[in-house]
Length: 348
Image (tube, rainbow, N blue to C red; front, side):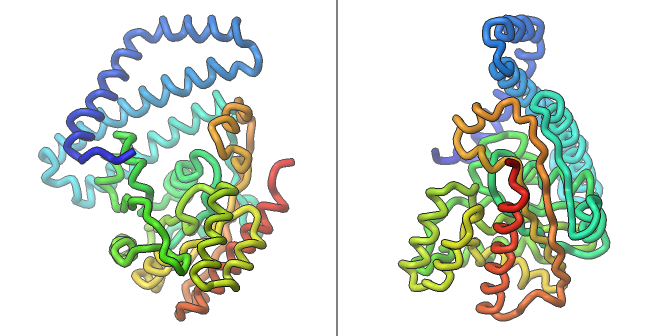
């Protein structure tokens, strides 16, 4: 579905969500009675009341975030100082707070836990190399619902990083994400067809990504998902076919050997590396959401009762290749590493 223009999202969608939030809050006792009735009627794992509660909570969460963002807008002089360092810090603090609240609910309602591991102890992922002190480019596997939320929550609230992120433009349908991330350093990218070579279409997209990555400081983490979308078996097969059609049989063979990730699209990541040559790179893999590809899969897995395990691999800036072909081989090497790690660590 085509994204509506910004004026419509700001003047129609956002106020509608706030109004719905107030209506739900004012009738919350009624919704609780409905949830209790559903528990007695549909006792199995309480899927229906869990989904209903998370829907209600997310609506209230979105509405509260929008009200808070409106207060910040007014305090900034009706947007006049919204891009100043002080108000950028306020928006990052607000982001961290609302993500903490969201994941507290996820732990309670869905029994969702998050654990980060590195090459040594279980705290490596959140300490060194993720700790502030040097700019980072974070390239993450993309699989399962909400993995981008989990990564940003981890970076802001546990690694204490300011994030810059590349996202799909469809996420702007969520008014809180739309307003918040259009005030912070981010780029919403419209889905686009691939070139016949299997790479991303766009010079324009690479330019946008490069502009976003320029000027990273020691507190910043630039976040990108090189696969370009959530992993599905069908997308994986199409990506391999495009590599064959584009005259890249060697990359196609390597992509065919990776069962848990899709062939990475190098353009955006390489543009970020060119714009931030002093940045270290952290590759991130995760397991726990792999089986949730379709809506039916998500329904079957509720309540999730899952531990999301995230693994980070640190590459110092001096070890990042500079040439295009060398970088491409290096990127595929790392995605093969992520693929093998997912095989070994996927929940049985």
